[in-house]
Length: 619
Ligand code: AGP
Image (cartoon, rainbow, N blue to C red):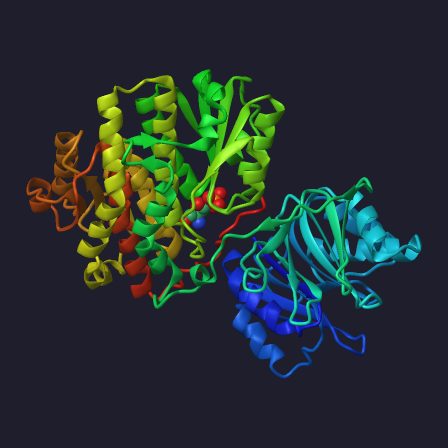
């Protein structure tokens, strides 16, 4: 949730740290801070509440010199967002400064113990407890920073990614992780000397180097100014760093002329889907090739069941995946909220395949769910967007979305990327299990290939949604309805609106309306109905009648050429025709645009909505 940046080398650290914080601001944005050691050996700590820009203003008149530093953007867990609780936190002597992402679960016990030993605290955070513990060990046991960190972390229950500066060692940056991500970038400066960068993900690093090391759980890294990097685990075993080359492109991290990342990412969907399908869908051979499935063919052919664990938007795409995989590959699929699954002692068989769907690949609940499944012997498959993320590394096999970095907190292109990947997965399993006729298989492959063009058409034909979104800014509630494949789209449409406009919205299976929610419908209630001219069209027409009789305002998503639903609607959005199973990939687009324009008309910060974070690395 929080973002960490670090640097040690010969350059001025501050500009690198601030730029890195801006890149990571999507992870948390209630306060930010930075710490450097200058050439006189003085350790500075500067903090501000609010956005990184507020920190920059504060730093404008301060000494920000120094070639070593750490920085942090916070999403509060312990203690309200203010400058005292913002990171970096200092040890009692003022010698150590530390930034932290994660939760130290036993911080209360540790704090009481330290207080009994005469230590005092200024903040309410778990982070301050850890930095004080490290210093306490350093002094009591007369050891160096690395050893103190190692010993302190052995006493910690919870999750952490930390980076620490020691005033007495201005040539050394120490970091460690367990459960929260940390990436080390290894670069060469203009003089050919090695320098090290640190980030919660690779986005603050890519500008300087594409050579990275993903720190593993319970590893501690010591980087020094002479280019030495040493990684040791908590059991004191030296580790060989595994270098990876990043494929990320810097342009992908910029807004490219759009006012917000979210709008840019909505419009990127056609191309993002082309990249996702590239090399996996062959039109020439009318075939699907997913190496993650081919390499583990037996696991999927013999699978008794597939369980998909996910959270939020990823849970919605998983639900669409369930419908498709069951239909195409004839395997029972269960979709689980990872947060529920991990704590309810679920029945997992060794011949189950457990799939984790996660854009960030760092969601704490999803990671814990697959760790539980692994203990019970299941085969683990990851569907992630962020390359090298914790879930991608914790699974036995998997497929990356390849839709490019998603910066807007509200997920858009990752959602469609997940849906398309799950469709590919369903087709790949169906091919191995021979559950579809050649004719149906080819028809689905041909249609899937058309989806990016149809997405482009959908965007072009709905770009004027901004002109009427204004009318809905006064609404306090919205209902979203869909059936079959479009029920999860209704859930996703409602979530998008809630997240960025703060208007209450609920998604429902359309036929469930009459079992309760219809009581809410009156002339004030906009009801968004996904009503493509396919499968259950007649049934959804009846559902619309029911709402109209209660004077609800109908906003529909209809197939091009439709007249019946269009004429019943107060407003409508058009999408091109496609197979039932692929309608979600098109129908969600006008809903994303609707949320975006309602939220911007209300003056909301759509890229960084209140209380949310892009990567939910805490429970
Ligand atoms: C999406 O708009 C949300 N911000 C949120 O629901 C998100 O999908 C959820 O936190 C899961 O994240 P993940 O895909 O990175 O695991």
